[in-house]
Amino acid sequence: MITVFLIGAALATELFPIMKTPEEWRAILSPQAYAVLREEATEAPFTGPYWNHHAPGVYSCAGCGNPVFRSQDKFDSGTGWPSFTAPIAPDHVGTRQDFSWGRIRTEVHCARCGGHLGHVFPDGPQPTGLRYCINSAALRFTEETDQK
Ligand code: FE
Image (cartoon, rainbow, N blue to C red; front, side):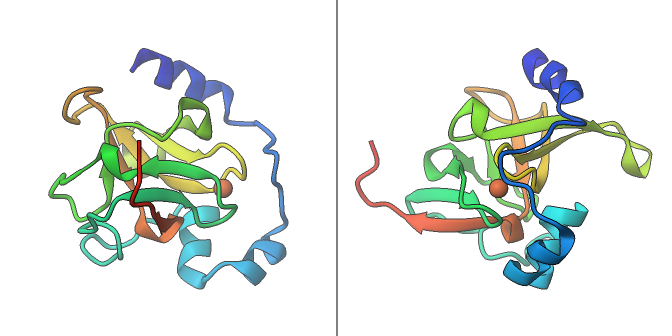
């Protein structure tokens, strides 16, 4: 958990492997995906396609296709947003401190395109104790029936 917070500060001004202008992003994203990924909007709880979604598979960034979470790490948080205990791999997501709305939170984004995914909180279940609270609109699910 400490590592997550320290890395976050360093990513605030990071350049990403995939960079597009706002116009380019608008051309390929739905309005809702654009609002979440590029403007850090939060979808209303219990509205997205994945908060109550239990199929086995991989959740990728809706902006660039980078795999970011997987079903084995998904849990029912009761929040109305898809929630995970960990990313699919530590270097597939980045974090930074978010001081908006008068709260200190840890923002989570795609490490490849910088798209906003959600936030991570230190109140999750084991094995990590973390709760990655992610917007469905930032994700695209691919079913995978033979997961290792
Ligand atoms: Fe991405």
